[in-house]
Length: 182
Picture 1 (cartoon, rainbow, N blue to C red):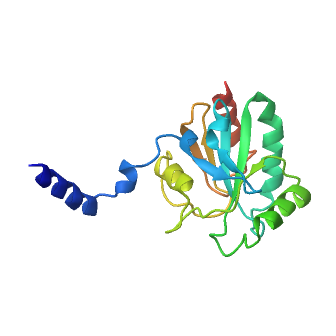
Picture 2: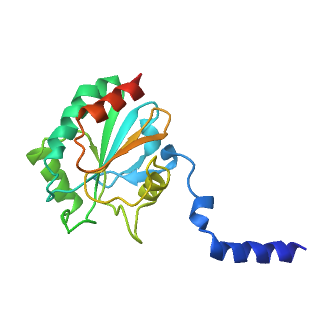
Picture 3: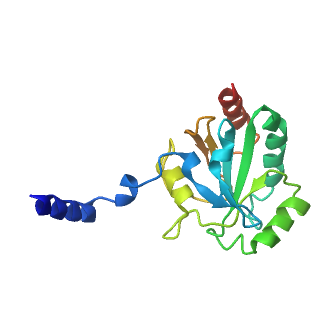
């Protein structure tokens, strides 16, 4: 009897993706590396509204660093955080090392929000966090380009996802941030 269930489990494993069964249960369960290589538990953001953004230094949307900084400064004292994840998935637009990326975003773009180590946001080497984010997003699907924005509520729920063309400080985004901060 035991062997029948074991065999059934093995067979079903071929037909159903096990990733969903064993997926992390919360945004806060993930650990990532910051831009300096230190491990960071995302539980540090509990109680905050968080904007996750995949960034790139050589993209047509790179100007959005300034907009990200603007929205971060406007709401950070109310419990808002921006977390940038450099990714080189689209046209080789983030080719640098973490140190080069940090210099670019901090010195050239004036970004003071949290920056993490470079990861992959799509494909076979997608980072587990991004796999979780896109699977649990209100509009799931692969990240299509640099500077997609994902809003996480104070309790860790994925509340909104915005394509690259939507400015981080646009009224549609800031209204959602303000609603989530209440």
